[in-house]
Image (cartoon, rainbow, N blue to C red; front, side, top):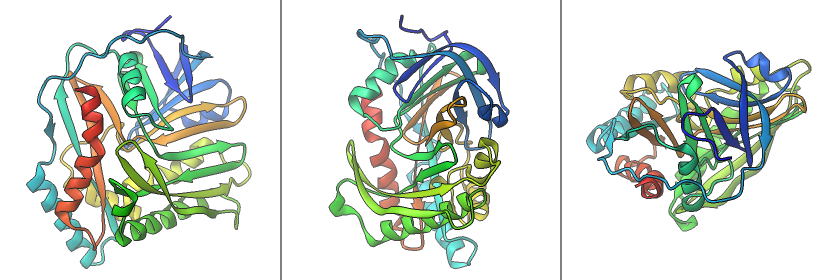
Length: 333
């Protein structure tokens, strides 16, 4: 049976989760028992939902997605975004920070409550992604559909892997030295984050600056692997690594302060984490919630951003934010 908009359900890791048993904001529950869906907003709100059933989604056609027909507006228009980029470059020149991810939130009116099962199917056809997840939790006031290409945290027992993305272009020929430098900065940040909870000497970088192709664009992706220190839990891991370094900047504390000054609205689920945890087997996978829709208060939200360094061209960074969402807006519209 295909779940509806008023049901509590989720799709993640290829499984359909149904029969909600528990909601919690305590990350320690993820090291207990059961199958959990996890969403953490960029600002830190955590929703853990334990489901009794995880099964292959039922065969058959999904409901038809009703296109968005309203006008999309942006929390930062082009002039404001360009100004924010220049402000970051000034802060870099002053020595306050090395890199800041500056984001804006697009929104369009969408009533009534959308059918996220239909949206998940539309995204799977039009923008398939390795870490796609859809979470429909009216009991928690949370509706999110993500086509994320980016691994935040994958855990298998005491081994954890992160796959930060930095560097985006329409084709691999469009990637620049700035993209590579940006990626290396964030890899170093992720190494430090994981090092806070890892066995000393176990943090290692694999696949540095690998090029991955995704619908309509390419990314530079690296892999950071570590072994968790004895007794470290999901709570420790999230405290050390969230929000993800690839969508904050470096140093993270300075970048977060500047983001709070420049971005006029909260990011919400966008740039947070979304995924699943099997506490019984001590495994799980959380994505960075980019390429992610959230429905709230009658509007469909979609975030986009770019990493700003001293070498950034403000107008090119604006174009990168346009590139990242153009295909997604086409899917839903």
